Length: 390
Ligand SMILES: Cc1cc2nc3c(=O)[nH]c(=O)nc-3n(C[C@H](O)[C@H](O)[C@H](O)COP(=O)(O)OP(=O)(O)OC[C@H]3O[C@@H](n4cnc5c(N)ncnc54)[C@H](O)[C@@H]3O)c2cc1C
Image (cartoon, rainbow, N blue to C red):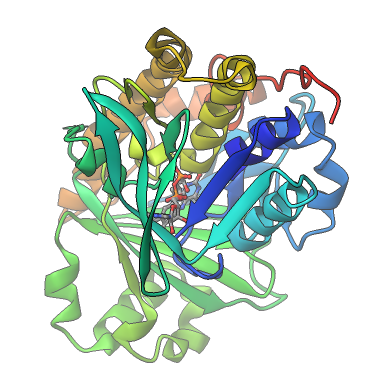
């Protein structure tokens, strides 16, 4: 959606296909990091974004073995010293409505891309399906931004390298009361990790389980899970029955992967379709947006010129975005393997933050390091002004 908007803004006729009829799915991430806020500011959408319902988070702490430890601190960072938790459907609707201002932005809801059309190894367009009819759409360039289970990636016969993950996450809501803690925070205790995102009237909660562990958990009565949640966060004990059945709990299968090559002649993949991120740091949305900005900057000129886009331009997009993606994935994998799997395997005793780390995290400048890495990312993208006046 962001790439479509940026290209339309630059004067490029663009068609965006979305297979669902709306963006209203509970099962999506909500973190809008400073890097994305900056992009919204650059395209003049920040004021409208700020009118959306949202919760601003300036620091994140962990309760490790019952002891609170601040870990990430945005305070003092410029130009944005917070991350916003905003419903992804509102955010997408904002981008969509901005795109609709341009007559050459064609957003087709309930249209699913089903395959690629091509000749001599070059992608020339897509096959699509919409309310019982199928059709072909030809284009100078196809950009696959169809998520971690990308249909177009499969159609192109491209396979991502899997890096594995020791965990999955159970994703659910718990009601929130005014007397609850204000912060967004994680709880780490022997064998368990739970993250609570403050969404004002509810807690968006992620309960981390060993990979595939949800099957065993779901074979037990929901009461067992309710008790476990209440043990980790005692202030939720009085409303644990809000989790009335397993239907209220979704499983996020954590996946970390990356394509070796993000393009083919006439086809570019970005976002989760090119690299699914671990949920650590909540960066998937922000990296996808950065990819979109880099792609729009590189592609607007060649697309405006008309005709097929040279593959070297597509390689430039990967060249800009692969390195930041690799570094963030490497940090995520280190945290997954060295911290999360050890906590999940622990069957006795209380986890502790080592003294030296606690001493370091005492300093805000140290807590700024993860805030910069996850909040702003590496190699920040900036929106180039449109080449033509629309
Ligand atoms: C439960 C959950 C929680 C998450 N939490 C966070 C978080 O807090 N913060 C964060 O940054 N990231 C989070 N993520 C990851 C984040 O959602 C993704 O990294 C990010 O949305 C990737 O953006 P994308 O545009 O590449 O793909 P997506 O957001 O997956 O968008 C792909 C879109 O393409 C559509 N589509 C798919 N196939 C087709 C098709 N064939 N034809 C037409 N349309 C199609 C889909 O309906 C979807 O709207 C979470 C993911 C999940 C599943």
